[in-house]
Image (cartoon, rainbow, N blue to C red; front, side, top):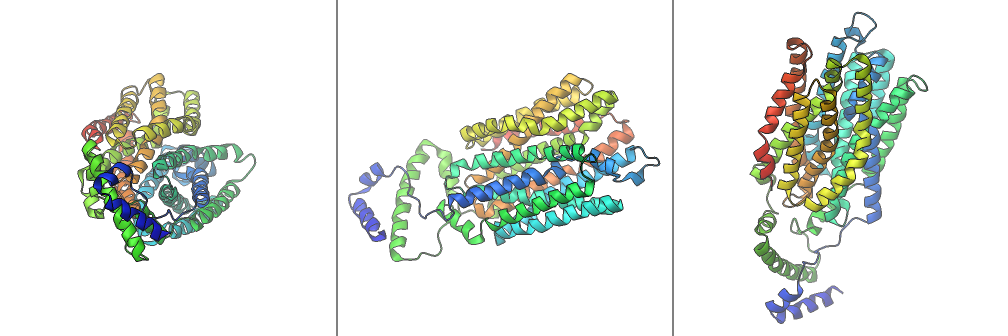
Length: 485
């Protein structure tokens, strides 16, 4: 069969370049995709369920905090039985550490993912989830602040690892133009994950005790981690997918016929890309950089602008989530604040169900135009920052800011993931490139605690100055957002 294909292509070559140019509209794939669709579907589905159930301990922290306060976490910071500012500040500090860890841990995990393969990382995160949920059950029983901190750290580590391996699973699909769907669904699961933490406020202590509820979550998350990891990509399969997508050269040809066939296919590919580059000059540059090393990608202005934008916007978003309840409590009555906090908790995950289809359509249409995607994101961040900062005493303005934030957050992370799925970036570098983005975001997250501390100790709980500082930083990213192309 391979010999007939080679002879047919040789006859086409003998007819001359004009014949080949007329009939070669697209380059034939150099290799068959190594992953079956059923396996890809199972792996992606297991990761989505894992993120849906196991990520709320970080991104549902606004809903988790009342559960922790009710359970007595850091109650030793208060003199009486009622919650106090010292207890809230301690919980905010732990939240800041979790946000930093979930970003920082992605870089070493990314290196391990690229060098060991996604399968081993997926299996390893099963232990992380099991240990984290065990620690939080013991912390509830012993009322140990140290165990609360350790548990929440591990429960930030687990989702950070699962998020990265879930994004990498998108390349298991044969059609690489559909990766944006997986990116958007992964972001959706993160947004919806607070639902399970919100349910804990209902079932604890009416139906289940705190340790039992988290033990059940631990068993489910550990089982899903094993399922997702056992069917994920090995290192050899990752390299094979890069070869299949034409991102790297095949280093081990099995026969002379395959070698000749690939040589002819590359010639056809080169002529096709030459015609495409005449119509779209940017495409030639992207394919020309497909063999670049990690350092060349990292120091390129395209990637550096992406880092700047994601770091600044993510810092503002994390600060907004971490302090939303305190910002609302500052100018609202106790009854109004309770209602608006519940509205935020519910809207945080319900809105994602309506936003995600729009994100999929938007990225499907403009995924190749990063300047448009990130330009729209910057415009949305500025509208959110304006209403949140300058309408800080208006309920209506805060609700508008809340709604914009609900649309902004899933689009931001889906766009970031999709940005690194496209050439010139390789799947074999995905873990490290995404890890570097998360580490820079972690550096920005270090601003959350000092800004919160400044707000309480200097401005008496008024968040206007803290929000203004972050808004000015967002304004300065306009050039970077609109220059990503």
